[in-house]
Image 1 (cartoon, rainbow, N blue to C red):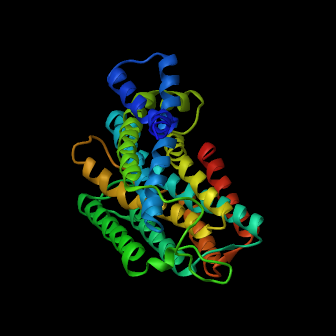
Image 2 (image 1 turned 90 degrees about the vertical axis):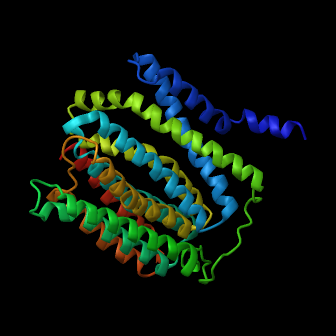
Image 3 (image 1 turned 90 degrees about the horizontal axis):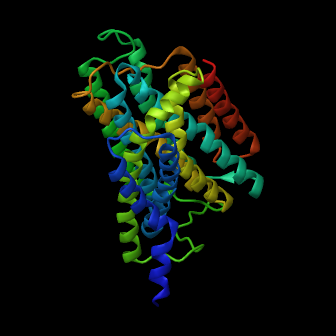
Length: 366
């Protein structure tokens, strides 16, 4: 009985959040040498993985589809905090950071994570099966949020450039919160069965038996460690962000690549979780994670940066350019055709991955 608590306390997922917070306190507000930045980067990556691990523990306790919601919100909290932190220090050069990061999150989740999940699920089990009602509703919400927040600013005339006026930004922020709240109500209350995994015969799987459900105490401990890990991620990211920006500039890459790196960093653990679900023939859970993250990324980030713009100096650029609008429109069309049948082959997964590769290529070579 004594060995179990001791083993739990010595696990890396338990130790890492504490180490991250300690390093944050030691290094906060100081100029850091390269060796220290390298150490912080390693701890930062480990903290992200640890955060999602503890989110998975909590998610397993509350069950699906609540579990996917916990993961999506945890990842989005990291993303929002990183965006606001970098915008606070970046000045005018970070005016488009929120747009770049949110769009990167949409492309990573709707093409990268969805494509990998469908490919893994279909290759391993013949076809990938999921519920088109729930997945279609999530996709429609993502498409609406992306259009209202990232496309409309390109065409409005009340503010110069690719920006919203104050009234328009307020409307976009409130609309994002309302739509996200409606989705959560649909996901957790009204039509929960639409977002549960299904069998090959279309029957809803309500009980998972692949692992024992953690106790309430374990779930609460993981919830506390999740909070510590998130604090560590946000603080350490502030310490390493100048190095990321300097590296992107030294490589001669567009500043938008910073947003791509941030999104890839915070979504990597969730991608791993989605692939695990796809391997177990729970593609619906994978799609919940992907589309839920895309939705949370827009639905929570836009209101957060709108609120932060009150005290942040400089413009807030949200409108997409023509190339990215084409990619977004193509993603919505392809995803809609993927969702409608409720099953997918490796071809659909490959199409989404090619779209994701095109986005990465254009990010490096705009």
